[in-house]
Amino acid sequence: MSKDSRKSSGSMIIISGPSGVGKSTICKQILKQMDNVYLSISVTTRPKKKGEQDGVDYFFLTREDFSKQIKAGNFLEYAEVFGNLYGTPKDKINEMLEKGKIVLLEIDFQGAEQVKELYPNAKTIFILPPEHKELENRITGRGRDDEKDITNRLAGAGREIAESMYFDYKVVNDKLEKAVEEILKIINK
Ligand code: 5GP
Image 1 (cartoon, rainbow, N blue to C red):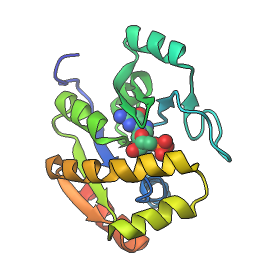
Image 2 (image 1 turned 90 degrees about the vertical axis):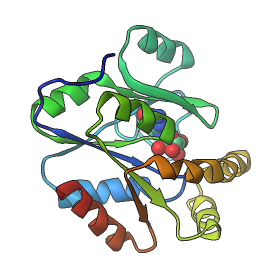
Image 3 (image 1 turned 30 degrees about the vertical axis):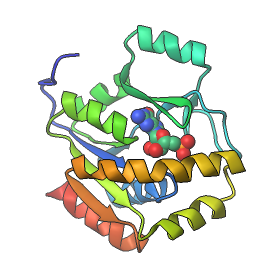
């Protein structure tokens, strides 16, 4: 796709950060506290975890079907994260931007890079943990991932944090309300 110059009145906000840093909770708070925000639902090949719903948390697809979607050009961006594919469906994004919505993407740094290429005005925000130990506690404490997954995610965190230097803003999620407040200010800037 060429660099985006579509006439749309909406804006794009990208939230990234290591696994367990609290991105989903932050995004839910933003949705609660701001009108006119659309949170994109990603497509993934990773198996559904306990408590997750298809079409709510993600659209869960097989690798084969995900590949078909890639070939059909249906993704704004996609990337492999922890051995699974994740992508942002294009159709809804365009529709919401045209409606003047603030589009919120919770995606990894590889996806953030791709979207920034297409939408140079997108604001990229990287969420940092107060410290590595805290991240470990959060990932282990949420009881969602198995041991192999936890090891993978903790190992990936260092690399992801190094990528934070390419983001427009960095927000430390020490206290949730404070982090959300900071992000709302960035969005409203
Ligand atoms: P989880 O498996 O914990 O739900 O997500 C793992 C990682 O994939 C997180 O860093 C999350 O931000 C990222 N992710 C979720 N959806 C997308 C997407 O559509 N595109 C990309 N590039 N990353 C995504």
